[in-house]
Image (cartoon, rainbow, N blue to C red; front, side):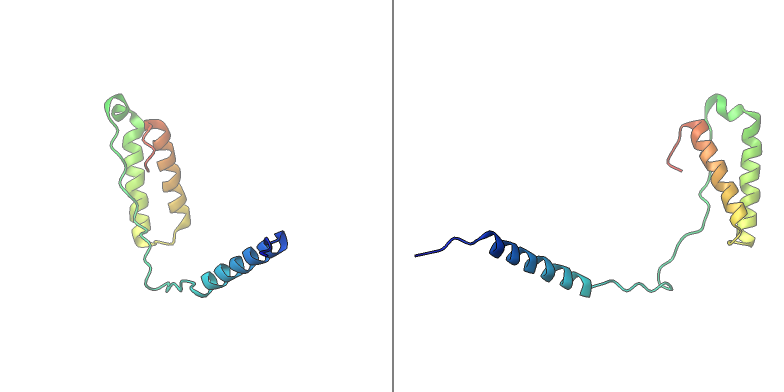
Length: 102
């Protein structure tokens, strides 16, 4: 006569399988070497404005300011104030032009 597995037996089996999978996944942790991973700190170029937006007075000033900030960052890549200014300009440009892939 065969007996049906009970709820507690099924639960114990599932718990054992869960522990087995979690323990084996913990053993294979990736070890990253910070010296081998590189992060690009380059500032991407501004998208050129088109149409009426390209004729706006602040557009020339914006391009000049971004170039100035790029030069600052080339001299001192750890200048957080300059980086935040670039981010602010790029966010404003994304809102003005509708080009959000910055």
